Length: 353
Image 1 (cartoon, rainbow, N blue to C red):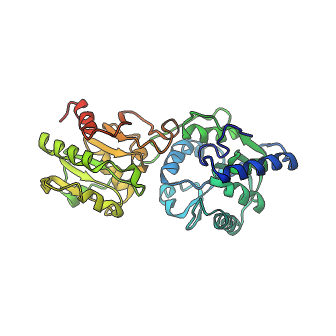
Image 2: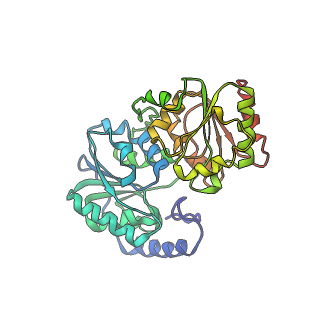
Image 3: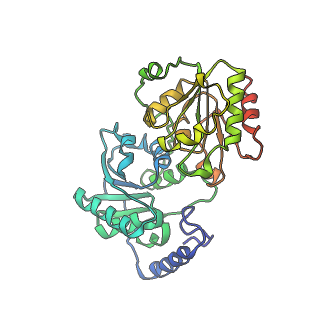
């Protein structure tokens, strides 16, 4: 049992729920004695109810594992099914309208999804289960013989094998730690596993030429992550004045107003706003063929990890950098946001503009 102050190992901070789950764990570990984990078969269920960035990292880590001699089902949120559509050897089970902070409704949605799948597994693997709803639901449904994962949010005592959470460790290594219970020698993080279909029609759609544009992803549905408007405006002016490149903004449609507010007194003839018009894999294709990507900590940053172009990421400090930093090469990480010229100076370091 973890007494370091993060019972939920990075997903639950100090509050009244933390104290409640401490009590649950304290009682559970003394009352319930689970049988030790014994690897008895190859039928596996992976439960990962994280958000899209979590699942991209999940794909990078399980990609090569799926080539081993296992029959794997994956339980995820329904809106992220598209990330796994190319895995023809994997059965996808989804939970619709899942909200990890709505504990009771989440519990029943997971329970129903497992019940409706009408399957039983040798081992159920929990990679991320905020507030423990995945662990509790799976164990009560008796969907598997063995349950392994992190002792998340007060229900670790229900697991046959509780994997120790290590501080200052990247999320992919947390995933690997669970997989290594099954395959001790497995240690693969494959950034090329997400190969989206090339869509050259995007160039015609937006009037772009390969290697003649910059992609910027400045906003998030969490406003605290947004590139400050003064910094964004200053950077955009610098790019347009010091190069002949187009600038392409990407993101969801809800973020388009924020971008437009930054475009006052700017020549818009070379600015393209795609927000909400294209899907995530098309965004990745645009980034792959750009000369520079500028963005925030987001799913797009994770999706660009395998790409070789320079990438400048503004880190918002809401999450642990050690745990959630983008993988791969050619990243410039900016942690200081106080000066509007910080981003411009990072661009200047590249000696391309």
